[in-house]
Image (tube, rainbow, N blue to C red):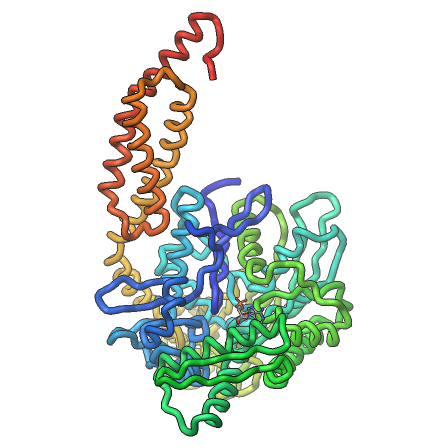
Length: 619
Ligand code: AMP
């Protein structure tokens, strides 16, 4: 293996986590409290640093307008598109740059990319503390059905968090990689059914082991389908509506504060989760005005509400199977928290005629797979991963129609070219409108961006031969280039994304993130100090034990007091590096270092004595 560690990150709608993989296999990394799952929730309070994760989620009811959860749903989406998704969402959704979805929190505009960047930066720190060295590179997973704008937005978020997204991997493909490690070495056709908090994906893959070599299997995605607006959150909203209807029945028209609405939402999710193991979920919800709603949701009620959503997942499954050529399936691997619902398992069992495979931890499998992909990129494994593009890519042609250049489910990386000409004399520029989607008309597809070709040599209409190339890389991300063949000139391309940030905007945000560089440097210093202090403590503790009675009691007491102080500071620094006084920490480490010189000398003297007496040093 070569180079710096690349970590695998599952940037989820509800939870995110980080993992690494080495020769022993993949493992998730935990924070100082031993927790692997980081809630993808951020609280912004004026005059304070953003709070990420558990603390932000625990107090979401208290700070409904300052807490952003499920922001992945809005990544790379316009404000208009997002309004429907914002139902039940606590924060204030407003139009951001070029009409993109953004949040207004405490009078500040925050983009979904910045929220994701804070989650990614927290995971990066978790990894740095756990691994004991800086981390700058990651494989990040996205729903297979994420379009180009959503993938670009994820890459931008990584950049803002100081991470290079080495590869963007589709979540079901990552899950298949993790699954592939633990199975019998025979060819299999597998469907990965990934039903999470915000999105649904289904991929059909062929896994072929290499007969000669281990760690070099082929993972080929045959087809993928999904819906980036379908997840457990939608079930929560239905349950929340049901609860609100019960409240209105009991108390008439109600004006609920944002914090009580958040409470209804939290109860809805809790009841849904409880009903995966039980038949009834009784609830008592405080309305904040001295009244409380008492009601019981049964599994039957929940299933009646969720059934249409589950049916939608099966439609997508059917479409993916058709695109894959109706292979016979050996396995359906279940991934994502919502596959814990008995209704979902039963529906998949009926549909596929197979018992769904639920042995993988649905919370961890995607991150573990991302770590496996990172291990492949580091040269630790030789598996071949062939993924596909989820949605067709095309250009606008005359009359508002779309000419498709790259069809959905084409293996990536891929390239396609199209040649066209001008319609007016001496035209020196032309606009190419790039679209993604399956429909025939521009209005029904998603606009990726407008690419303006400039600086064409003036020629009569119909003479220039403009060759436009679409290149989709292994991340499923598109780049467009163009050349005029007759003159041999490459036209310059100016990209104006319809959604997402321009590179200038990313640079500005990055510069602003540099305003936090001091904070970042502080964290790095504390992480380094903690790692080195732990090594000192280990060495000094062992030496003290070895030296036994040779250490005079007064000196031993002094050493033990300094050890206890440094240990306490290490624990505090690992718990909360941001609030650690790095200078005091450094002084404590230095003073133990100084104090231990005598101990060091004693052990050397003992070793020398041992040698001169012809025996090995006593232990
Ligand atoms: P993920 O995006 O994979 O983390 O999935 C999170 C979603 O799974 C959320 O909507 C959770 O409410 C849902 N979920 C987690 N555990 C359960 C459970 N036991 N039963 C039903 N849904 C669950």
